[in-house]
Image (cartoon, rainbow, N blue to C red; front, side, top):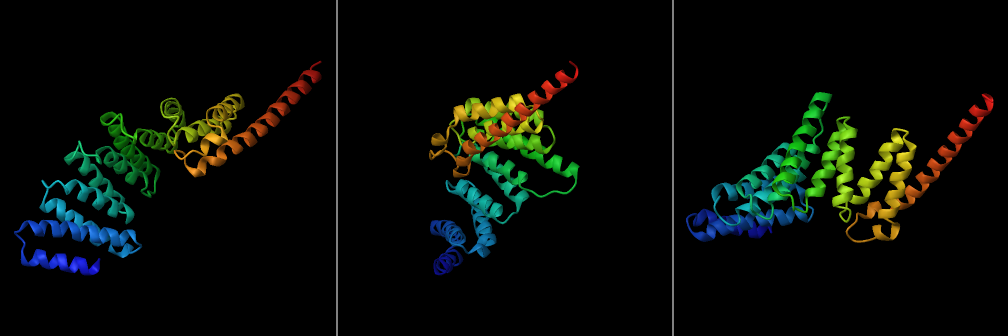
Length: 262
């Protein structure tokens, strides 16, 4: 790849006006990208620069949208969250009908979501900015495969802003509309955890039981679900056992109270 980059650069330097120079610039970016994917992370800045040069030099070229996409990912992998978000959002603005458009808005929000911020006001602004991208994506591309991703992250933005009660309807929507997606099981399980945390044991029990009804262990072994979620069914059974013990204790305590009051 290094030799290929050098050769393509010679074409650009010697024949900048011919069509092959345009192709050479794109191939340079592709070579850097392949190097970065094979473990050479030190070339990520060069990858970003090469793709940015392509879409700024040849904005009307059919490959410009790909250059936006891979430039944004290079910045994302570098942890340059603001830059990555900006390029992903720009991709969608410039190429709103491309196959990357919906993902571009989702990743723009996701990059902001990943930022490390200090101070409650800064963190809240971060989550609000991320939610704005997620909301825009859901509204603009309602049939995209990234809708449930956006909804799930929106729910967690709300939770991180101490607005958990607003997140519950979002989790419920995911379970109803996207049960077969990878966030269906997590959303239903999170509902159980939410009520458990509130010590609303009846709703917690109902939520975990609903989880086992909708997502039995054998179903979670399917390819569409995250392997990390395969243990959720077993965990739900354990938590239901804990809830049964809590219920038994509460009933016993209630009986003692009634005995004491004759």
